[in-house]
Length: 300
Length: 220
Image (cartoon, rainbow over all chains, first blue to last red; front, side):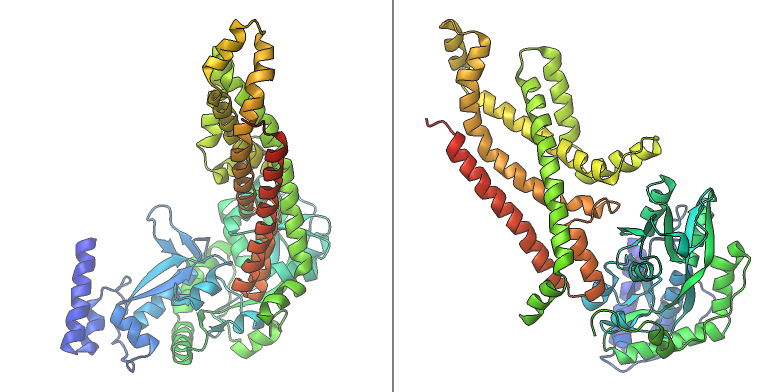
């Protein structure tokens, strides 16, 4: 592994010094190995050029949220819908993606302090967050729902009064639940896997967050069920450091290509469709529409 | 600068409620730590072999496991085993029992600091063992136990922050600060005030222990 890595670095340096940037992309091994489109060149000083020079892009994803970002216990690799899109962005730059864990609580600081170049962690586009970071166009639209044990009497968000509901600190559900279930007691934890632990041990009565995350929990524990209709719409966006317009435009381009050339549909079927049996069209929502749905709540 | 005060004013109710939860956590845990710590400490210095062994087991168990792991065991572990333990009980008991191990060690070293010669002298003068303990050993032991006890209280106040991190067991000061931060992203300002909150507690504890020291300590 180390030798391989060193070789790659050598290759990168050789390219840089020989000033044959266009040929470099082909030297890096693509993890999928299917698409070998020539890599675009970018003006020096842009984030894209810097990343190409470094040869890697650091992407913050969830490590415990199947089917979006989770560690496959067999391969120890991070996988999921978000991770696939991360690979697509890295491939478009001709660099290797490095995935780090970003929980709801730390992902925005990660962009601000440069720990991560991009955040792809089931992050809902909101106006509050948009004041701190930039968002790509929506790449997925989830709905807020409620997960309960099979024998629960709760039939939807309106029944949550007086119950204890688990969700993640720093997620949009802190506010969603305060608005839609003001009488519910919130149990706010760092990761959704903790919510799963808590509902399995009857420590909480329900978990509420995006439908796809809850579906992931049902896949690992079928004694749980989804109830009620979706009570919020959650458009996910790629998080980009505030003010990096060129990079945002680049990511937008990759996302729309990912949606239009069929890779989105394939990833949807692979990670979500085959488990839920449901079909879904790729999002057509614009960033402006997404932001309008989440007007400012706190700091703008 | 204005941001700093604005954050405090705007979120004062959350900060206050978190602060009060931390105070309660610390108060309950402290009582558990002192009561259990004294009992275990006493076991550790008795002439009875099995009692010393029992005390030793307790200390090695609770002192050698990270508090965070204790919290997971005491809450999720017990609940999975069918024991309906609440988050508050799990949190305070874990912190209290964990700190008790340190209190016990402090008590033991305090008692051992009193020279063996003094005990032998007391016994040879015809004092009963009970009298030797209460008149000679304990008054001197207290003198050397109180200052390290102060450090333990401070450590405990800081350790209490872990309870809110683990499984959201309590909405304490750190937890509230993180919640405010997740909405405002004013990280520096929010955690500055959280630090001030903890400082208020630790500094108060320091002064309390110092005044206790002045009143209880027997002069050499």
